Amino acid sequence: MQTGIFYGGATALVTPFRAGHVDFPALEALIDRQIQGKTDALVALGTTGEPASLREGERAEIVECAKEKCNGHIPLIVGAGSNDTKTAIRLAREAERLGADALLIVTPYYNRASDAGLIAHFTAIADRVNVPVIVYNVPLRTGVRLKAEVVRALSEHPMIRAIKQADSSVQSMAEMIRICGDRLAVYCGNDDMILPAMALGARGAISVAGNLVPERIAEMTRAGLGGDFERARKEQFALAELIRLLGVEVNPIPVKAALSMMHLIEDELRLPLVPLEDEKRAPLEAELEKLNLL
Image 1: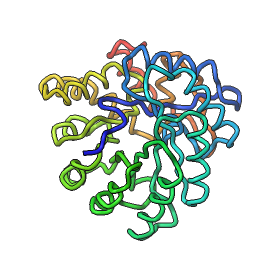
Image 2 (image 1 turned 180 degrees about the horizontal axis):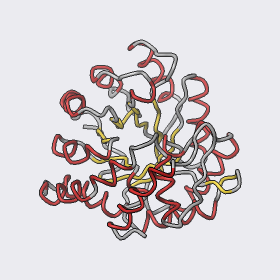
Image 3 (image 1 turned 90 degrees about the horizontal axis):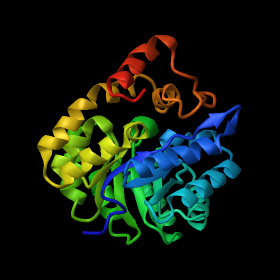
Image 4 (image 1 turned 135 degrees about the horizontal axis):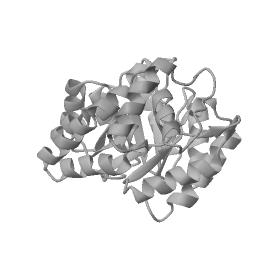
């Protein structure tokens, strides 16, 4: 089995904005909080980080900031996907140059490549970098579902070391781990499925809720890795309502609202995303208070 990039819980970090610009003091404070919360890795510029709304200069500055804060503490994973292979290669090589410890590469969206095209896309990127690649399967976002057999073929490449499986199906998670789990690390990409994924053999999770409760996501995933599913189940149930509320709108709208309620960032997104509607804020705030986060 190939070695994974991390084992346990990783947080898919938000990108904080203030007055239209990236709020770097807030970003630094968020990363410090993640390190103090014992998260096992950090993902910058994933879906939660709104990379589609960032200029390339901003992307580079975010990676530089995150690397400076993470260096020597936890691995930094950087999102570098695109539906254009040449662009993805350029973004991946730039992220590597800036210090990424691993790359998160989403399936090419909108173009809807064939299985052969998906293999060619990921192979072309992995051929051009010298850091591990995590393949990102998120069909609800991309309209493309990676088959386990395709991932198995990709796992033959020495730089393709893991998959973030965000398919919202226990059956697809089980199939991915059954077919590919001896070749690469499978990470759960859905917070509401962490416990079943760990029970099936996932090596960890890349979490949105980790922005709010990094220590509890770390606790849940480490318990699962250690076979203590009773402890993991307690955490999954304790966080179930928070996780549900983080899904009432498209990510990262609810998690940014929550972080704003916690006075950690401004509740600011870039169009076409807009802040959480007022009627959806009260239940979220009540749950944060219940979890002693306010």
